[in-house]
Length: 188
Image (tube, rainbow, N blue to C red; front, side):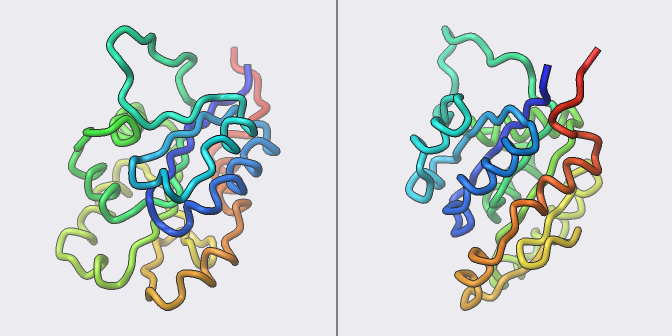
């Protein structure tokens, strides 16, 4: 069985690169299960994601009569991770399908890669640094949206367009590989 990666997209400019990130994951051998926060919907080509992955794009909470998706994910990528979603995750708020999935997979301790996209004003909020520390302690691996390094970047709003253009999805697949997810490993 191939590795399964849930890919959560939040509503920020990097969301327009969701197809590029998904393509990189698929090329690396991952079965990708795309999921959007409600705020991400206007930024993302959901039909393109479905065509690329062969899986439905989930936004709404699962109806009680619907079965849970199986098999469980073996990795999680969230790109971009907004201030709102980062805060909800650190506090355990699971009020949408995406936030519930983020909280569950963090609790399961699956390899978790996050690409935060937070501007300088929001990063100045007194809770931000503590939330990053909480999530780091829980095992979240950060990918800097500017240069691919392991520390979250804080963005000046004037540079966002350039950052989105230069973002390399291979930064994400590289971290997943280092965490032991090749996307083609057989599981016993």
